[in-house]
Image 1 (spheres, rainbow, N blue to C red):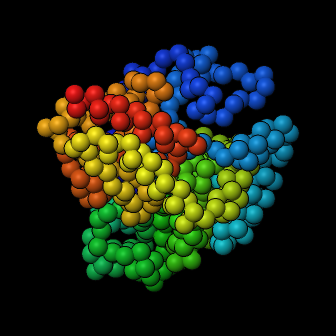
Image 2 (cartoon, one colour; image 1 turned 45 degrees about the vertical axis):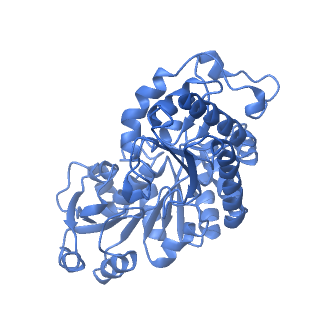
Length: 417
């Protein structure tokens, strides 16, 4: 899971971000130069970009597409194609590259969750596609989930007319299947839960029921893009705009071909379906395919080494201040990349971590720290307290680690005076 719940960030971050909106933008030194003739609409609209020392959070517009992905999107925007032909070709291409039977580009991972559920309920039945979520007579609609795996995206499943059946033990799971069971749901980054992925798949298949895995933020490592389908999960969802670095409003639904086909029938551009509002345009489809191509050319060890080097450069700055310590932390599943944890003695530095975060946000250039700053949950491996700063280094652009380090040094140094 992310270092802080996405729901909490949406609730608390929106007000903080809105308070910081003003006219201006980062200097060219802090980002790529725009193409000739391009209008800076951030500046025109009075919205200030920032250095992303947080991570791939939706409210912070996730990742920046690599140049080759941006180029693919720009080229795709220049010509019309038949949308269903593009969906089909992209799905077949992605399935081959990601070692699964079928693939569908969706409008984000949450849409992939909804379409996966709709696929399991309707199975290509055209009247069922029209009837959900309100006319559920005769349709299977029970989704088994571990109680500890309920999360901020339950609504994406319930919105299809499904209802949850909670279990906690393997024995409860084995006894929970009925004639109305349509799917089992597994949250890949859940910290709780007593039932393993392998047992979750095994029992579901013993009952002939498909199992779904929400692995939205769970790359890198790159191999996770096929690890879970090869493990036996019938459907797996990923975000397209996080580690894969495709367009922010994209997602991936991977899995069995018959279920992927059923998901597409519930999806835009088909009218009068649960997914009609989940439109994915030609630019997003091509952008995600290009993002996957880019991501598969990367190397896990090289990426980790680069992120550690960025964290080390920031560490060298902040450790010059008495009472400050820094260490690298890698979350076990989601956002499985090096993060920098900075702790300090509150008797020496008279600022809370939240105050440090606000000063970074208010400065020039504007910098957003990871929202776990201020004391993350101990279960995520973060130290508790109000004097913990979390820096997400993996979305920094070249040279920005030095800027972040310098600003943290300045802010913490002021607090020490």
